Length: 115
Figure 1 (cartoon, rainbow, N blue to C red):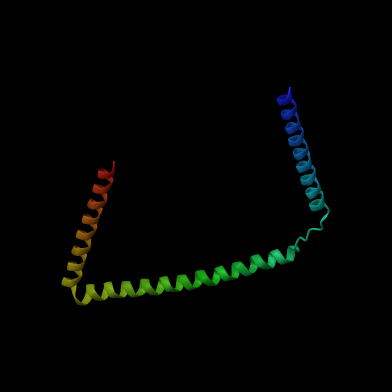
Figure 2: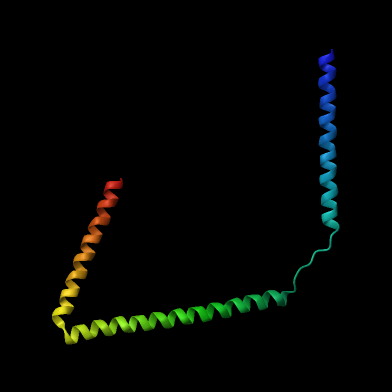
């Protein structure tokens, strides 16, 4: 009988701790509900989005300018080599073709070996 009484008192202690915890959680949630919440104005959000869009536009314009400049330099080099030194141009084309074929073959070999 003592074992049953001992277990029943520990169960009661667990139940009271459980209900105390639940009441503490409910009190905390009630406090959160009673707090004032601050929501920024819609104009603030619109201004923030507009600023980010302007930053992105500037970034894209700079990247586009760098891309066009580098493309012009590469094309100028290729055209100059083609017109002034055609043998060098054809040698560079052959080397590029060989490198591409070898690299592609190695990539296929790695995929076949990994399976």
